[in-house]
Image 1 (cartoon, rainbow, N blue to C red):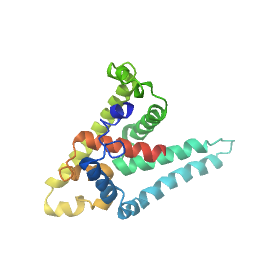
Image 2: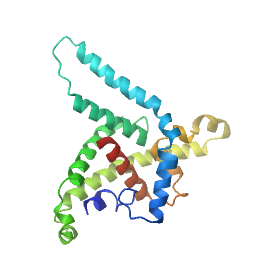
Image 3: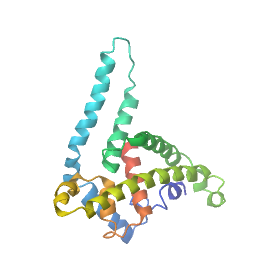
Image 4: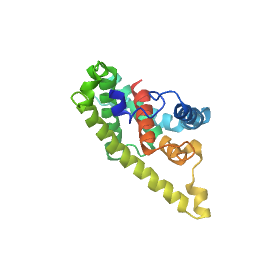
Length: 211
């Protein structure tokens, strides 16, 4: 019940019932999102994020005072920033989006990983007695995802309307695109709705960053 609310009706691969949609989503993930080529393409991003963490640690070590660094929080933030960058692009820190991702991921972990009474008493969930918090979190995810998707759609439209010379510079190879670029460009091929795209993005972000 809780997963259905937060994950757009379990429209992604992890919670989706086995069938044609499940197979399509699994193929999309393995062939286009997490292929060996795609993972290798993220190496510069990984190196840059590692460099930022090392810079932070070096700054703490040379500050002159006794600075305590919470390594658990530092590594948690590193994992969050890395996956958010892979999912939504290198400008993921704009408007503090990485912090919003982290807050929502932590909330998802508490809701999906804990004991949920509505899973045992579905009637309570239907009456919206126990799912109110999940609905509220889903609304926050929706607002964040709509903003990020709108930015990606605008950028993709700009690329598609560019002339041939500009396309040589603007059009990216799939290996250089973030997850949302790929999901949006492959939307018709795999029969994806916007809710499918949002659900897949939330799940990938949650399991990669929280795991």
